[in-house]
Structures are given as C-alpha cells and as structure tokens.
Image 1 (cartoon, rainbow, N blue to C red):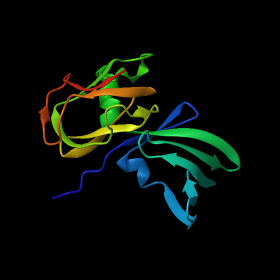
Image 2 (cartoon, one colour):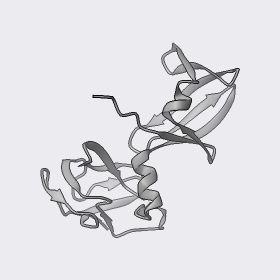
Image 3 (tube, helix red, strand yellow):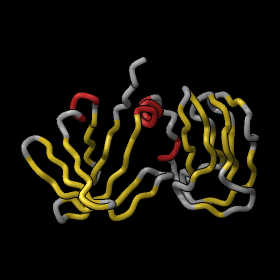
Image 4 (cartoon, rainbow, N blue to C red):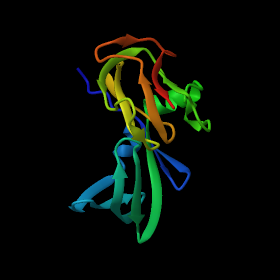
Length: 163
C-alpha cells in the first residue's frame, strides 16, 4: 500500500505557498536546533526560526532570514471546505458551530460556561479516517454542547452553541 501524501498550503503574510509531493522533494530542510531550520530550495538557503505556534488554529510566527512573518497552515481538507463555501469562520459572530462534514465525534474539548478565544479547539471530528479539530471561529462563551463523544453527525448538524 502506498502512503498518501497530503498537499499543504502555507500562507505567509497573506501570500499562499503550495507544498505538493513534487515540490516537497525539491526542498531540503535541516533542523539546526529545536525550532530553527535551514531550508534549501531553488538554489537559495534560508534560515527559519519558529517563534510561536498555535496547534489549534495552525497559525504561527516565524523569523525568515531575520524578518518576522505571520503564517498559517492549510491542509487539503481546509482548502476543500473553503472552496465548498462551508467555512463559516469569516462571519462576524455565530450562534452555533455546525459540522462541516459528516463524521464521528471523537473528543469534546470544552465545557458549558467556558469562555474561549478564537481558534480554541471545540471538539475533534473524525471524517475520512482523519481527525479534524473543529475550532472556535471567534471569542465566545459555550452555551450548550449539542453532541456526545461517539456520536455520528451529518454535515450541517449544530455541534456547539455560543452565548
């Protein structure tokens, strides 16, 4: 069985860079020390240092050749959700977060009454054999959790209600 490689888009200061299986082979990355890397691509060598990384929102601050940059990782699933218009996180405030796809609730990461920040993990939804972190689209207080661990959900089903 061949291992499936996922394409990833890294958006650095708003400019997207797609990492495909083909161009990943053209990039040589060497870790110099924890959080610091040397990247060789297209005949150029770059020094990259990860300053801060938020796993839930896949956003990070890094220094590339001495310049501080803001970046975000987008997986194929994130891109597919965006293209399908199912990413509701661009709206100002939402009362509910709904399932972006059918799946199985694997873990609930919040409690009723908890105050959360944008990007805070709400729950883990398994879909297409991948665990997907469903994160808060904005700052909110959890009013209700409308699903249980182990529950199968359909796309569009409300998962969490916000105050």
